[in-house]
Amino acid sequence: MQSNYVRIFDTTLRDGEQSPGATMTSTEKLEVARGLARLGVDIMEAGFPAASPDDLEAVRRIAVEVGNGVDGRQPPVICGLARATRGDIEKAWEAVRFAARPRIHTFLATSEIHMKYKLKMDREEVLRRVREMVSLARSLCDDVEYSPEDAGRSDPEFLYVVLEEAIQAGATTLNIPDTVGYTIPEEFGQLISNIMRNTRGIENCVVSVHCHNDLGLATANTLAGLDAGARQAEVTINGIGERAGNTALEEVVMALHTRPAQYNLNTGIDTTQITRLSKLVSNYTGIVVQPNKAIVGGNAFAHEAGIHQDGMLKHNQTYEIMRPEMVGAAQSKLVLGKHSGRHALKARLASLGYGLEEAEMDVIFERFKLLADKKKTITDADLEALVADELYQPRELFVLDGLQVSCGTMGMPTASVRLRDPEGNLHLHASMGTGPVDAAYKAIDAIVQQPSELQEFVIHAVTEGIDALGEVSVRIQGTDLKQNAQKDLDQPRTFGGYGADTDIVVASAKAYLSALNKMLVATGRYDRVEAPAVQQVVAS
Ligand code: KIV
Ligand code: ZN
Image (tube, rainbow, N blue to C red; front, side, top):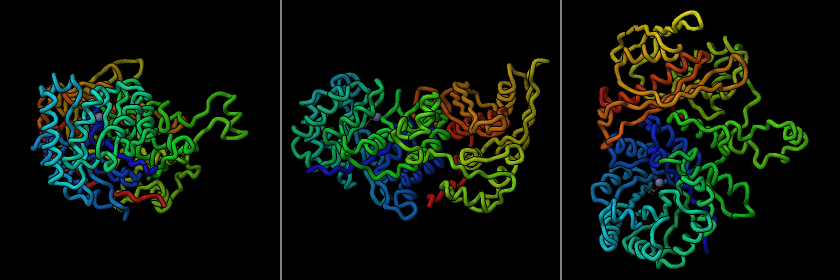
């Protein structure tokens, strides 16, 4: 008898972090991992330890600090990815072993095209390698997952044989990836049913699904797989991931939650944490969530058309299938202002899930007072932007110490920028540009001297009103390969940055500096020591 519990396996920190520009510092990864633990994921894939010493260290830190429980909860399983090689598997084990519930996830492709061109292995060799490497992983760890990469395009008859081999070698979870997002729901559901029917010993394993979104079908395919009997879904926050991304956690969870009669499946996810984690991941990666994105987009609960608004006023279920508060998207009506004290601010932050140390409260309270002088009412969204801007940043190697711009129609836009370098020295530079942001970025470049190209620049207002706080997300790409110091990559890497301020040029400069600071760490120009992570508590 199949249980109706679906394990949520989050891979934001591994497959998600593989998307261009999604690079996170290890402090950011730890913060996301804490958020995932509070969200209630069953398993988190914390990274790919063999990718670089930094990646291994980040996974190890998560295993130690999150893998032994957060806020007294049952610790999630902490998983490390490994290619099917001895070196990768040993590194994955080295990284996850300190978690209360470690898992090694190893993969080897099974499609003809991958075996012939990428692996240059025949079927026999693949079978032998799976047997040997799954056994090795199992000799180290009781919990082993095996994925036949590109299963969606593999010969099903060969898949059954490979999966049987993995089961005999000790795999406890068998994950079926649609690596290139090629399948369609009926087909993928059928593949899962066939695997369950034709693979000997599979009843003792958990079957998992892992879908990519190249045809926009990742969520539909995942649901079809669960309907066919899979009981683990591999997902990422906001659906970030390689190319068109992975299946979005929020979509699968809310589909199961909203349509219980259809699926009769449940998860352990605290859905009210979804929006906050979505924002955190978006701020850290610099990957902006499209406004019409299901569940977490800015417009997901907005009703613009008159007919819709009229319907909503009469009965919210006329146009709403989920309440925004179910995913933590409802904005509090309780606003703070100029006269609100430190105590009220602390209480509001705590109810939003931020348990700040006194020193952190000092910083946020000062920013709050400055903001309250400029803006009449301060909402939860403003507070979240302030916390993200002040506390959830990579170690600030270069800090913005001053900025002055002159722009408009009467002359060349000019910016004077003063930065403090990691040794505490101040540098001042003035530049001209096509606009104030361009001028400020040129001045920053002149001081920091780290060649990069701006790939994306997105600005948006946190709340309505002319006095709103502006949020800026940028993505920059390095123009030389030295920044790959820690990774064996032949493509320049991209880095995201975030900044918030009522002055959008200041927010833009902060976002650019935050991305540059990450790039500087990756080049090895500075050591990798980072500021301690912010502690959060769960809203009561
Ligand atoms: O998409 C994929 O095939 C993967 C595997 C490593 C599971 O991410
Ligand atoms: Zn994947």
